[in-house]
Structures are given as C-alpha cells and as structure tokens.
Amino acid sequence: MRMIKWQNGTVLTPDQTKLPLQEVTLKITTVDQMCEAIKVLRIRGAPLLGAAAAFGIAIAAYHSKTQSKEKLLSELEDAATKIKLQRPTAVNLFWAADRVLAKARAFIGTTEELKAAVVEEAQKIADEDAAQNRAIGENGAALIKDGDTVLTHCNAGELATVEYGTALGVVRAVCEQGKKIKVIADETRPLLQGARLTTYELMRDHIPVTLITDNMAAYVMSKGLVNLVVVGADRVVQDAVFNKIGTYGVAILAKEHNIPFYVAAPKSTFDLSRKAAEIVIEERKPEEVTHIAGVQIAPTGVKVYNPAFDATPLKYVSGIICESQIYYPKDFAKFGPNFQL
Ligand code: MRU
Image (cartoon, rainbow, N blue to C red; front, side, top):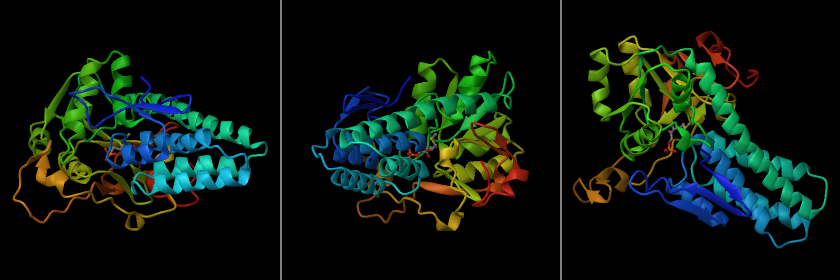
C-alpha cells in the first residue's frame, strides 16, 4: 500500500501520530504543513522522510505563482532549507531534498516545465523507494528459515517507507515465500513506534506478532525465543548504523546471545563519507519521556534526556541488507567515501 501519494498539488499520507486508534489521512498543500508533519512525526521513518522532503519541494514548485525561473529556484531552495531543519539524523531527508534541488538547478526549459520536472523527480524518488524495498525483502528473505522468530525494534515497516518496508519488507517477503514465521516487536519508548505502528501493520497483514516492552528483550533472548534481529536504519556511516534509540542495546544483547543482528536499509540511507562522531543525534522534548499518551508519569520539572537515535558500531552488525546485495563485515572494513555501493 502506498504511504505517500501526490494528487494535483496535495500530498496524502497517514497521520502516524493517530495510529493505531484512528486512521486519519493528512492532506498537505503547503511547505509549512509538511514541515510540521515531519517535526511532530505525523510522517516518520527514514525512507518516508526522504519522499516527504521531495514532495515538500514539489509542493513549493506546483503552487508557485512566479514566472521567473530564478525566483522559482530560490523558492525551491528556501523550501528545502526549511524542510531540512525539521529533523537532523535520517540522511534520506537531506539526500532526497538535495537530489530534487540538483535536478532543478540543472534543468533546461521554461519555468512551467521546471515546475513539472520537480514534481516528476519527487514521484520518481517515491517509486524507486517502493521498488528498492521489495528488492531488500527478497535479498533478506534467504536469511530467515521456516519457523523462525524475528525480533525488531521501532517501525521499519510500510509506514516508515513509501511501500512494503525495509526490516518489515524482509518479514513480508519471507511470508510471501510461504514460510511461517513470528515477529516480536519491541514497544520502543518513548514514542512507541513498535507498539503503535509495527504491531498495527503486521496484524493488518495477518503476520503473527507479539509485543514486548523494551526491557524484556534480554529475557526473551535468553530463553531462546529469538532466531534473528532485523531493524531499519536512519543513517549508515563508515563505522556505525544510526537507528531508533534502543537499537544499540538490542545489538549488544543479540551478540551476547549469539543471535544474528541484521540491518535493512536502501542505499539512500548510506552516508559513507562520514563517521559516527560527526552525526547529530536529534534530541526531542522532555514531555515525550515525562508523559505517555498525554498523561504525566514523572514529577513536574524532572530533568530529562531524550535522544531519539543511537549509533550501533558495525562490530555488532552481522550484515546490512540493501537493494542490490547484503553487505557483510568484510565489506564494512572497506566503508569510506570512495566505497562503491
Ligand atoms: O523517529 P522515527 O520514528 O522517524 O524513527 C524511525 C526509525 O528509527 C526507523 O527504524 C528508521 O527510520 C528506519 S525506517 C525504514
């Protein structure tokens, strides 16, 4: 199912803050609305953020009244700058915005043709993501046997992508091959993407899923209840994988229990010119920790630390499943600015 659609200047996408209790479709027609949706996680998940950034610039192009190409380009640059300010960690957002801008800057043609070309490029980014996730699913499916139980953290599913999912794309592909598998979903505090979104989309697709709280993962692994871990990524750098806070802990637990730990991510999530220390980890507001679903659970005024992502060093990663192949530790050793993906 398509998670983000372009309809004559309007972007349609589920409001993920309302799931699983309400299914509300956002209708986004301005760059400011797109920025707000990204900031508060109505739209979330690295590949979906990429498509949203591209469609956000497409909105600026489509609704622009200017006939001047120079003015249009400057409006597109402004839109991209605003969108990029919303969340710092998922590289897909920057990658997609820069790809659309590069297309616009290099475009030869009239102003109206340029507007259409920007919309077309955004649509292309979305279509490519959908196809890449199916390829990731096929590549990863070979790692999972009939009867296995797979643990995942956060939501790297259809809701985090344009279609099909990355980590959950692997799960879907395994199920489509007729293997009977089960999924264990970490709830993923503080924003509960596992509890709210992963369980929702797997139950909708009749894939067996069991929800656990984050602090149960060690026990569940120690009982031999997990055969493999697969998670998504917000950015893959030379020495680490950035993903939802808590992923690093899951990776350490997997290593301790001799459970393979895989990451599923398209090439648009790779940023091999950088190392972990250079990446900004988003810190979000204290209320996400002091409150659950609007109900205060901690004393008023308590000091809070709320990083939204962590970096898992590659020594904990068994492989990174992408659309063309699976990268293994022998490949990680060569990761750098000149590495050919
Ligand atoms: O803060 P979020 O919900 O945008 O974080 C999402 C994740 O960490 C996902 O695991 C990641 O983006 C991969 S999505 C295919």
